[in-house]
Image (cartoon, rainbow, N blue to C red):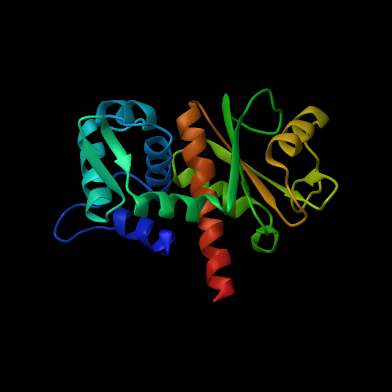
Length: 209
């Protein structure tokens, strides 16, 4: 299945209604939360992703319609198709929360590695703008050349402790890119980073066709 197309359908406007107030990154995070639980409720999902319960109900209704999620007395769980979609999305990325870095602008940081995305990076400004549109305070782009992490264009490297942590946690390979979403809350930072990651994955898929 093409999980990215499913994300696009779930976040698209259905005439004559309004456009959903959640993003593709929200959908990915919800799938991850449901997939990592034995049953989770809408109220907890609402709290975890920082949106209202009405928005969560709409999102779950669409996920159910796509055959990705089912509900029981235990709560919400992924169907086999839902697990397949989530696995398809996660094969491109690795992720980790990040603390005590000097290269970002917010109080909370979340790092997402996108495999083999280096050819789709110019200056990093484009990635920052995607994160801003997603509600984060910004995003820092780091490229990996097989030996070091550095910012595109200027070649600046993050402090050694940050580089060491990211390399040990995310295990980048030559040509991989790490996006650090930054904001005042961890969920906003995560949404910013994953919005950038999903955008890069779309570009990689388009190039491979």
